[in-house]
Length: 262
Image (cartoon, rainbow, N blue to C red):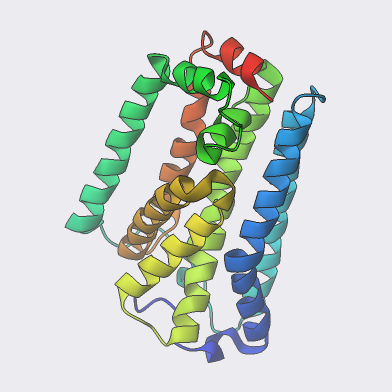
């Protein structure tokens, strides 16, 4: 990890802006995401274009933050390309990281099988039962609400999935960890992994406690992969694959999800 900045001096005149943006990722993004998702869910019952509109807002928000972070990084004289993961992998993942990545891939495989077997249909029916409010399980409801239904939504969702893989890895792994490393004076790798996991989990506060924990674990695994390889390449590919797997939800399940949308 000697490629990460070891002090704020590396950020030069951009140090304050870097800290403020990192702080926004930890505090502001969870609040903004929660508000945006709740407003989106409230529009679903009356606006057929709500999902496409929400996808576009996500694209604007994520690319906007990515561009801002890129401008801040460009103003930092001592933070080069390698310091923010913009390089080819320099090493293979360590054994702990490899096991964690395999566990994630196994999870993806079983989640796809669950989708194909109609597990999402069961979750949908549970949301429709009397007394089961839509916020009783925010993680399940938010996931179902985001799933694309129409061909147009699926095309736009594919762009959103690729954007998440690129932009979120740049923001929460490359940029965020470069700032934290400089701010804390090159802390041990486990500290950086925990920080990355916490920030990424909080960014998904709209999914409830279970969603925060799940995405925090995923954020930690992606941080391990990034720190072990010194490159964003593998984290970006893994992250994009995780999000794009929803495009493989069987068409037979989608009508049920559509009827259940609030």
